[in-house]
Image (cartoon, rainbow, N blue to C red; front, side, top):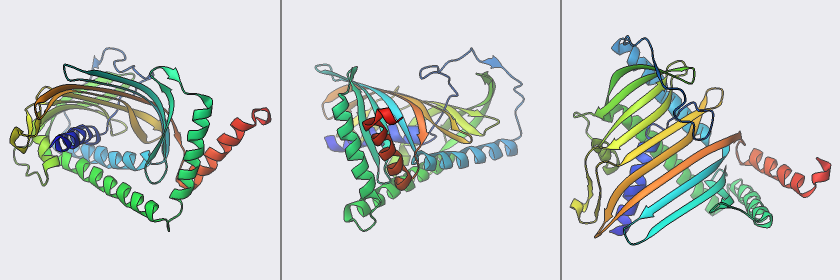
Length: 313
């Protein structure tokens, strides 16, 4: 049952994060606020105009999700867990490289200490091998991993679509942030929505505020809160308590492509008889289009050759 709750905790985070994988056009990794938002012309568009805008937003989000599989990035991850008797904190800086069968993680810093250059070279060697293997369609493991990745992509796409039906979007006006006009919507659970799965059933327990870049028709920020307790197996296996908070931001990393730059999750949950607090912050930046495995492998090999022969640069 502990495993059930662990899976649900992970799912809840992904649901509210992937649901509307969001953004804030920020200049610095933690520059979430920018200048204090100034009031704009808040005359609401017609319902038809709002629907048309949201149609574009969700279509763009699907495209962003697909594009993420071709971009490498660097993430700074801070996680903290506290169950009252044991506090665990982890801080890492990781290079994330898509491989066509998942993501390869190269540890650059661990607990504030830079990784040994030899360790990074070993990880790069392994990355090159993984990319080469992922190009072999006849490899049974490659086939299995590709199918799993495709299944996750379908699940994510279905969750994005479910958001549109699971919530009622209420116009809240416009704000000016960092020189861009953002449209603000409040999301409340749609009482008429019939959840097709236990995962989408969780939408009944959340409310959110969403900011949309009006000119780009891209989600710019999402601030969500768990509004009522989420129980597992009637509360026997565990529970995620109301008050949990999720924030996500993303920025334009290439014309027309907006990807996550910041996410934060804070929640309290009970597994069987142990109540724990969870805190996770991820900053992402240094996005670079690396392409499908064939292109990625060529780029990684060039990088490794350059590192091995710095005088030739």
